[in-house]
Image (tube, rainbow, N blue to C red; front, side, top):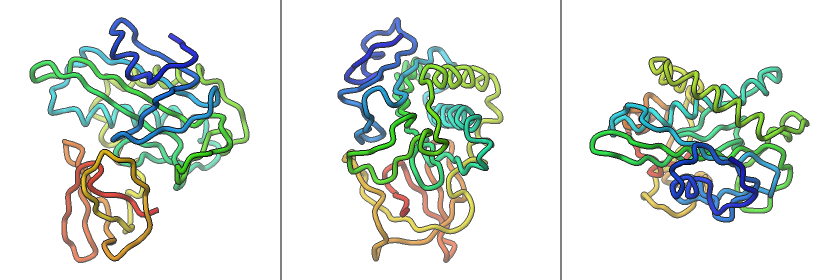
Length: 245
């Protein structure tokens, strides 16, 4: 389904349980993870939400959906970038990065029924054809900026939905693929702890509280596990830690 303008594709699907997928040209109240605002010039990018029903996952397995969606989006975009020796990666928890720039964001909202996931609404914002940015978003990039080509949003959306459906029966490979494509998966980088907040935050710059660490694992609940230079192990929920770019 297509509607030119909505407040939020995720919110619209929640209010209309009979609709499976909704694409729009503009969201008046587009949201990212933890309440972050998503900037998108009208008609220039791919903004859509899709619904997964009765996928047979326990409530404790919600993290799997994040990995599934991120891997499906990675594979979709990589088909367009593979000839460029691309540096496409998945930035924990589920952003898509080209180099150190954000190409796509994902917002997943699950509805639980007892001990199982009854419904998952997956919202995706992909920078497609936009070439100028007017907000304080620190590091956006679009497919057009990378390749110089224009893209059809319906084509990319349908590629993603097909890839998502193909991956779902292959659950055993999802975690290994996710870890293989993880942003900064090897080596030591600078990080900074922060208090849990739903307010939008910037990636920031190095301060006295910054520390160097490497990614060693992600727990079944989606927590990031880091190891510092002095071998200390630290585990973080989303928004408890930020990358220093």
